[in-house]
Image 1: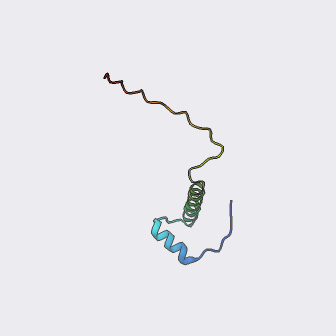
Image 2: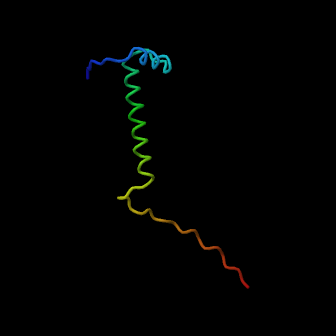
Image 3: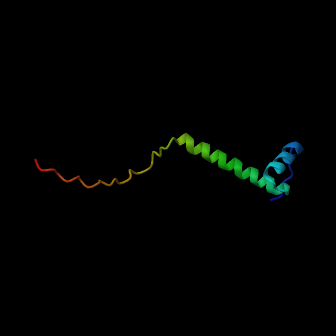
Length: 70
């Protein structure tokens, strides 16, 4: 998709310098991917390891230790 954007020249130059990317389009794509990854990670962290709709995982019982004779 073609889009016209006004991008801060200094930001773009710094991003190109830091990433080593030479094409402006590649820098924008990388930036969007990084933004999506960051937002996804924050969203996952907000869940706090909980999933209210998750079924309980089956648990394995380890074999009982042998009984010692008295």
